[in-house]
Amino acid sequence: METRQIRYFLSACDSLNYSRAAESCGVALTTLTRSIKVLEKEAGGALFFRERNVIRLTDLGRLMQQHLLAAQQSIIAAQQAAERHGRLFDRLTVGVQKMMPTGPLITYLRNLHEVGSELEFVIREMHSAELTKALTANDIDLALMSQPEYGPSFQSQPLLTEAYGVAFPPGHRFEAMEVVPLRELDSEPYVKRLHCEFPDSFANLGIAVPQDALSVRYVAGREDWVQAMVRAGLGVSLMTTHLPILPDLLTRPLVEPAVCRTISLVTVAGRPHSRPVQLAVDVAENTAWTSC
Image 1: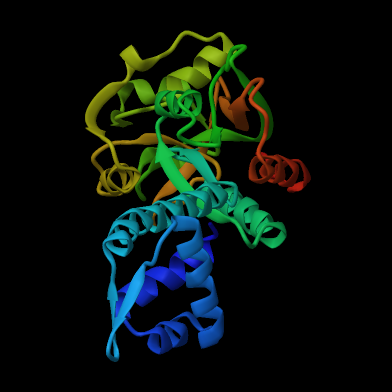
Image 2: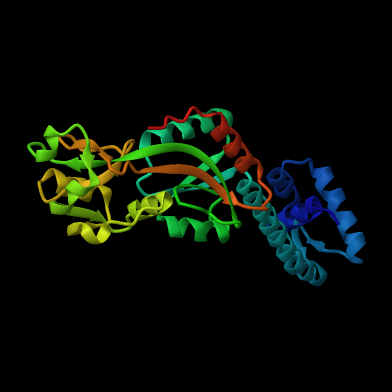
């Protein structure tokens, strides 16, 4: 029994007219009637009978209609599932760490689009801990993130390194400085990000985290809120070189110590790369990342 036989038969069941059924299926009338005769032979009896000019289903026909309708629905469901499965191999889900610099990210995505324009890109912003969990759970294909180390469960490909600076409003005493030593922050009100990765960057340098010495006045989860508070004179904050800043917000390099972070492309170690993931890795290797 072939799927086209099922389709022809069910169309005839709906219309109870061979001519209209053939037209609906886009086949000749002789093709449809011949297919139904073959189906009747396989079923072991007549599926339709004629009463004057009207076609009706036999008891066997009604029984076959019930089962073949279920079969057709299963076939359609299987085809849709196969299509969805195929689309998974044309989709790339990228986890991006909060505070990821926009410029380098867009450059990378543009380069990736040029060689994989048929791909569907899903970008998900998360915190560092959430990214590692999402990678392990296979909720994302790869991550663009910064951590002091990733451990044996992950494979990392360094992309760019960027320095931290101090952000402050116009007229602040830091404006007269070319660089700002970290110790100068001790007397300043500080605006802290809710999921700040700055301590991790210190840990990577083997330096004691100075969080306790900072006079934290505000804690916010959104970057635009942090910068708006700084611009309003509510405190100073730390930010990386490539991070977009609000107008009128000033920055100076942080020194003594100078602190940097490295953004890496991270995948799960030992997990075979799908075609989109391998494409993303190759493009990352060939992208001109700007480090500061």
